[in-house]
Length: 187
Length: 136
Image (tube, rainbow over all chains, first blue to last red):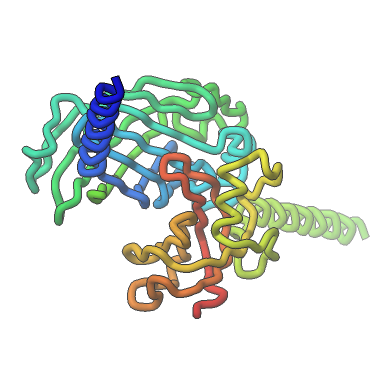
């Protein structure tokens, strides 16, 4: 009986170790991911912000990708715009994070080359306490041992229950263009 | 007499418009906050600030968007202007501060910057627009 227990424990321990080492080898991380969003309308002042300190994690074993941006990390040219964005629209004190969790479809990291290939990604974006399904194409390639992912998608403020006051409605585009640039380094 | 009065009214009207426009533009295009001049809301070690965010039960004080001074030893130096303190805090310096060749792993450092918040994917606190206070 004791023997069986020991064997079971050993099997358990080895499988745990196996899981761990596989995970450790297939993780790619970008701690300084770039995300830009723009909702500019022609003739009006540019509505655009970017962060260079978002986080992105990609697991080449499961093709899962996760990203997190702190909303307060987005910086605008105009400081008043940044203030209104944080306080009135996105309410970053209550909802400090924007996240994306998803999966690359039909992707094999071992076949990746230096020339970009188009890969679909399917996932959920969470912002302002609301979730939305996102499906888009990313351009992915290898660069000096790291994996680069670039791409964009469009979202609407109302997808995330963000209401734009009438007075500024015609100065802000109905669709917000989000652009990402991840440079994922193997960990 | 009448003409003089009319000119005075027109002139004061113009003056009013100019003053109003000046105030409005000043409000709309006010400068970004100046981290170097703002006073520090809290001064603590990298481990302490991490603890504050990782265990919110310990303290209800919200440091997000506040100016903080953080000290600890450098554990990682990244491209251009990012360092990690005690593997708990990510510091992005403002664009003037180069990090490669300037800082060394293991050296004690004190920085002042804006606390952006807590990244629970990596479990680190993020600070941006940082300036160097002390590097030993």
